[in-house]
Length: 298
Ligand code: CP
Ligand code: NVA
Image (tube, rainbow, N blue to C red; front, side, top):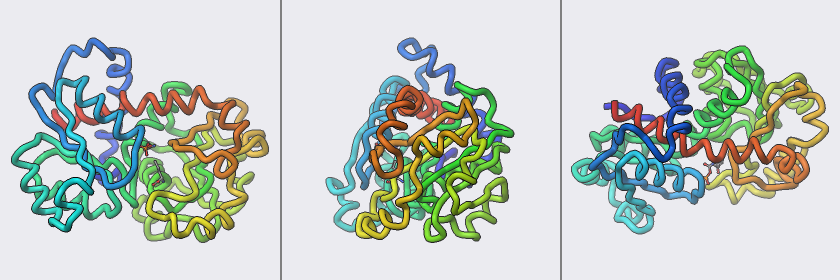
């Protein structure tokens, strides 16, 4: 039984297989020769908001022959306290796969352990593996292999998106630099678990110097709203803007996983100057999700 629970738990071979078949799903959109999910129902169980992940997975399941079923946690008994392991054992007898967006990574892991169906992490507090697979595909589509390149993440370096970048760096052999204030840098325990290729900086320009990809994410992740004021204060200097772009490589890409908050983690001008890349990245969520679903079924 295959799952996509985190990038930490994925082998390099599996990551490469998903990345390498994404282009075919993109090019064959509308005329997929195989329907690997034909006759299947897939549950999307979400306890946080989503635009891209929800829509891309719903469309991907449909276009691969299956039926998606969106379940907001508040509408099912899980939201009233039914245990994950009971929900998992019920759904595991009725649907063929599950795509879960929630808070605790342990909840996704537990669902996978009890459900006996392929389970996908569609974002937890710890990781956002489907996003980073898409981002790497998008980089390689525009610039060739990511191995040997330098990726600079600027902003909240301690949330789910940079964590998945950290695990990808060691497995796919690129350099990752994280620019964040001390309070929002990843723990040394996480960095040592990931096994290398990552350097943390407090100075944004030093981190961005010569980078092939500048990347950012929101300063206030879902679930962290109570910390907004403190985060806006401490992260104020950690913005992707023209000053930062100027020190990166001349052909550096600027990416954002979205949603974007202009004037916070990126300024309006830099966002719009890079909108083509950023919305290609968003579109590629659909193609990469198909590749993930196909990998899970084979
Ligand atoms: N990037 C991303 O996961 O977007 P959503 O929260 O809209 O799914
Ligand atoms: N770090 C962000 C990612 C949103 C796609 C969050 O968790 O809210």
